[in-house]
Image 1 (tube, rainbow, N blue to C red):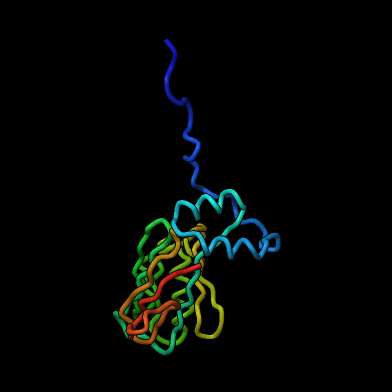
Image 2 (tube, rainbow, N blue to C red):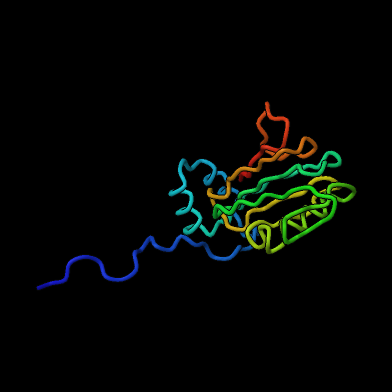
Length: 171
């Protein structure tokens, strides 16, 4: 009797994308085509077949000192949610960033630490009070939310009626 069905790995089982190719090799048309795609399945397929590496980003702006207890909640591509809380002293293991003075640098250290999003989101200072967050994994799943309770911190793609953080990552 003949065997029925497919034997071996499923052809669409590999949803991982190759490491980040050089952005200098991108054709400007890739970004336009990617933005026109309607759903996550076609976007992931487009990434695999076109060697395109669209990473979602957001900018967090620290407009002043944050008070103790205020927090920022960030979600990474794979669904990891971390809450970063302002405190009097920095504690990387507890995701507590320093509330005064250099709170943006302290927040960057917390996000990049292994106890934070270490390896899933890259945080870097883009200007005096702006922190650029970049999802490491490419694709539409990186378009996640950024929320929190701090009045002096905002995130890009913020809803117009929101007063606190409440923004999102986007490509």
